[in-house]
Length: 213
Image 1 (spheres, rainbow, N blue to C red):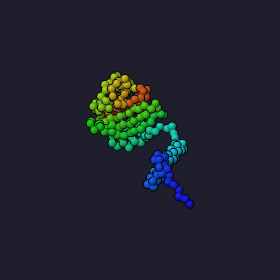
Image 2 (cartoon, rainbow, N blue to C red):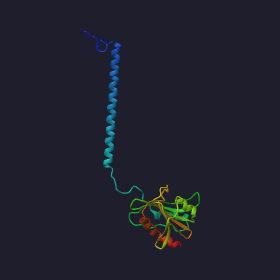
Image 3 (cartoon, helix red, strand yellow):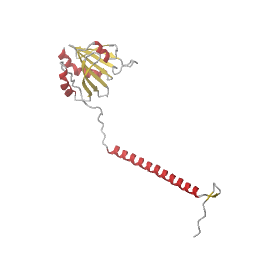
Image 4 (cartoon, rainbow, N blue to C red):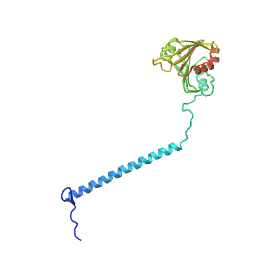
């Protein structure tokens, strides 16, 4: 059988040498492997995205709030050993839930306080502090050192009002607050809820406050 003549390369205008033939084949082989690698990556990515989609579709979802609903009464019962005064466990209407309940001690003032964080039915926040033997410095710190704007009476109990909702200052969670004192305990309510929601929580605290007067 006659030997096949060397391949003529148009760019060169002559047959390619054995070295050029080997280099061309090596380059073609490398390009082929690269195309296969890219193809495999695309296929793997597609399979991963499909798996994620399947998981999203089959995992059950709920409209329930993601925030934990703390058993305030249970935590208060355990925490009561650290405080002499009865800890407040307000009974609130349906729709209220707690995302925190704990004893807090201020490093700056040494004041021990029972804290409960509430989320209202409108998904706003109200923090309740029951400060044992609290002092004005502790209260001022909680309220971002804002000034009182008035007073209000709820269930016969007078509260000092701190209304900072129109303020442009950074007051943290103290957009609106109520404070009152019973015996040696100071109750501070602060947060972003409406006045009506603050009144609901304050009314739920009435039995605890009256018991300490």
